[in-house]
Image 1 (tube, rainbow, N blue to C red):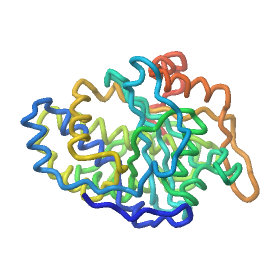
Image 2 (image 1 turned 180 degrees about the horizontal axis):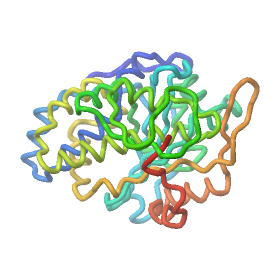
Image 3 (image 1 turned 135 degrees about the vertical axis):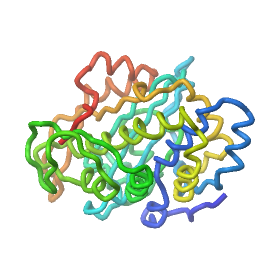
Length: 336
């Protein structure tokens, strides 16, 4: 195994951040899930390179949220951290998503928390969420989110957007739909209708700033991730799982996951997702009340009551039911 040097609270290296992409984890999940046989697990372990690990994500964390009682305790929560989106702030944190995998592994809810969310950062008072990562790396980010949600985080993976762009190119591009009628936003113009994006265009698409809509930037990132899963990792792997080993190997040379993952644990976990299909993976953004200015920083204000209801549902492994009760909360398939 290759371990990145542990970072202090004030010294988190950008090299560690760039050495990662959660899409590698997603690809590995899909490959292993394509067969539940021990033979495939052995074969997969032989074909894949050793995992690279991020800085320790859980070091020094005490008084953490407890797992749910009963069957809900078998659910898993994975924090996906996105970094290094070109043209964004220097802090490095661009995407924060809590991936909730149901106890029966038949549904996944990906809940994005805007990195500009105004939250309480332990030891630093109120600040934007990305301040936690900038000042204290993964441990402070995990602690901040667990304090905010009271949800136990089991694992961490880090997304490098440049690596996602490379994946898009390797797969021949992805398709996104731009609505026929939508508000103009800063950045490049996107003609209405179906668009095929290469890697560079994908980075520009997710990097467009939308001053009039605090959530549009987040939803655009969700659309890209969902299209990658739908168009390639699920459809192709269920037809011919071994055909994407080359892509998985490429990704895992740049993946950083937390210190609790091992190749064998990851493969066995992935094999448990055999029955998962694209429509079982749903994207949503944490509820907000609006945006405003805190000093020189533009921030997003989270909705306390609605947010508390969502996080209670996640803790009880009922996030799918919460989405049924809030049909407008799921991210649409088309985002300007």
